[in-house]
Amino acid sequence: MQTRERILTAGLSLIDARGYEAATVASIRSEAGVSNGSFFHFFDSKEGMAAELFLDAIRAYHQAMLRAVRDDIGAAEGIAALVRAHISWVTTNKPKARFLFEQARAEWFESITEALRAENAAYGQSLDRWRLPLVEAGHLRAVSGLVFSSQVIGPAQIFCRAWLSGRDRTDPAKYAQDLVDCAVRAVVVGDEKARRRRR
Image 1 (cartoon, helix red, strand yellow):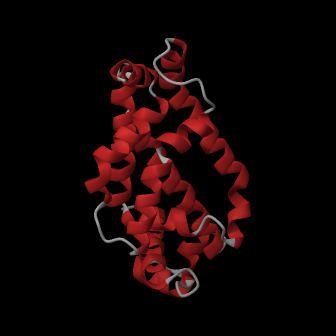
Image 2 (cartoon, rainbow, N blue to C red):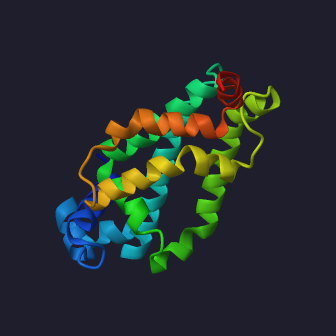
């Protein structure tokens, strides 16, 4: 593992175990096995390290989500894949997911606002390459990208946050099919038409 990755891994581990304030530069250096000079060669401060950790985590999450929707996957199948990818990423990357959810209002967060906006925009554009043709074909509802994400990922996010915080110890995967069904009903046009025919 390269030095930068060792520092980020140590930082994430200590922040997750002790909290952001208690994870000092000295403890992170010790955990990573690097010198003071090595730490400050890559990061100008603990806040700078946390900002890079946040961006690395959000990029990893976005990549996992985009892998779920190949160009040839249909509307309902793609929605199911997105919901399951979200749950899978959170449950297999618990410290990173908790860091993303808990640190989004930290003071240092302002320093990455523009970078995060660019990352989110790139993710939205990539997702739209799969989504918009299905909207044009009448298979997905014509809503904004923000509304789409809130309808598809929002409900799963609620369960994942409860699990990450310890408020609910049930594995979110237990709810996966219910959450998939909810998301499909919300945004897949064919599903809505099928329900009307069944009435």
